[in-house]
Length: 244
Image (cartoon, rainbow, N blue to C red; front, top):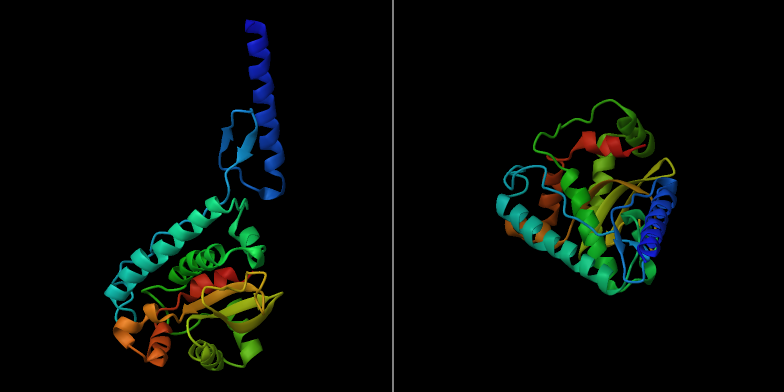
């Protein structure tokens, strides 16, 4: 009897080790294993997480006020994280990354897709801003790319601002790289250019949130003033790092 138990234990250990080896192929990360009652081993699904805010709530003042930032981060963003992870578990969405998740978002429930967008978009948005923003874009591939595509930095800002101002209702404006070509696009609600239903797909480089909750406490209905202030806090170094 002891010999049989020992053989079963060794067999389970070998199976688990084999699963670890296969799961790492292609750069996929294995977060955790759990043994079910039938001795099968499974990978926990990818869940979204809320990145720490890279500055204090008042760090972007006067462009973005502290109260708006606190509510935006602790209420709106936190709710997106909570809701999408609930949907992932309820709907058994077993994806390994945000990229894979968005590549299949078209067929998901509105709760899963919309809250996933809200979760990812806001992490991206926070990192797109900094208290120590430079008013001038440093020489480099980003500046060359913008000038080569739009003619000048000022023209790019005007076009990007126009897209943000012209987004009807809630949504976002984005600068994306589409196979090396820079484009300005806007998306409704919490959609983003990584989603399989996006009109224009691409690698996001810069984004601005134009939902009213992003600016209404300070700017009320003056979205144009909020957009103008956004340029004071853009993290150009982070934007350039995203351009590969």
